[in-house]
Length: 590
Image (cartoon, rainbow, N blue to C red):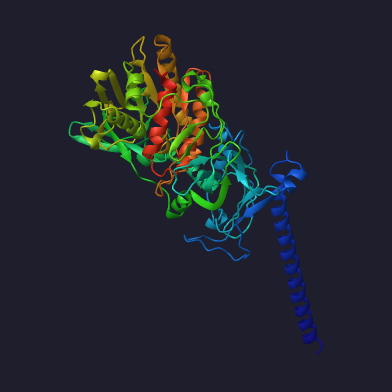
């Protein structure tokens, strides 16, 4: 008869214990959260002493205090948030214009083979972005560095505990006529520090974005590893009246072999650069006649959502920069003319390499001597053939320069549907000659294109005669992004390097330029372009390290960030800046 009250008492006691445990958990959790935020203000730069830090305050983006579960706009799978420490490698010299060690993270990114829950990714609504302000002056003057602290939180309002996401920071005015990019330091614990220079006075805006998530990079690298390519090209094999088309990749994969029951090794046919195609059933591998792009992708909508979650602006912080003692514009004016700058320094510059102010580009690594002037360009390029080898972005340079200098097309560009053909333009009166040539396969050209129209960079270089004074521009990027990992790209560069050495031996007066990658933020471009840019740059630097004193690197990345470039074909303003840099490196003012 006394058993029932005993059970009730026991139940009440259990409930009380549970409530007390929950209160304690929430209290400890909040204390831990606020401790982390306080530490964020002091631990980013151990070189700053306490008194220096105490003089600074922050202009924060207020983080929401609710801890309600975030329901993503895409379909989320079961809640599976774990504090996994996958990305452990900090990037060296993040202020360097050319990436140095992103590939040290490759195996760590490869560990991210699936994402169970979209809510595990950072969420802009909960992230903290703070601009440091000096407590004494409380003002920003032209010529000073701005520092922004970033703390990433996921969709469940939980602090991220590891690094690996790639961030951009830039400063610009309202109409975009003035802009400059900065760099971001990853502290490997979910916090980052952005650095950007305020070179000019005015009402400005600092922008911070997560350009690539570690999850998107992980899914991309694993997809390429499994399939041998991100997007394939296809090969058409024809024999008598039979014709078959199969997919091709720069890396042999079990997926490709299983899909077709075998493969054709077309490496020898591709100038000894690896190319593997599915084996046709009724036609011999020897009868390869055409190629083209293939946009097939073999992942589900959830993976597509992860890959498309990129280039999200975390915060726009408005501020006013006042003139310095030097005036409205205050920046380190370079002394060395660009044409006299040691070429190795173009591979070792820091961010930013330049900036826009009221529509005028200011070079920070050397002093330009030739402005955008038709007559000066013609004088510079007279009797110096220009040879551009690459993709449609170098073709864009070709057509823009040809139009500007009023050159006539003598070959190519007749049929725009088959643009991936050799093109030539000239202006005999001014002694101008220019040609454009696509680089080797994988090259994603119009389906049904004659494979013989695409030749390797080395083949092109070996056709340049001795004692030439040509200006040669080489570029790998957009088509690499569609297909290759760093190992496949390395083979391309090594193959070309041998030809560069041969060319410089017989024609020491040839000037060779490597055109660098640019930011692409187009919403449907579901590739981690910032990560791809970084491994492209690292491979180029590593493979050409003993030639950098002979080759000029044309950096485009920071200006493409500053101008908020969208498409794979950059805005004309970026082309004009890059081409003018090329002219200044290549020519002396007469």
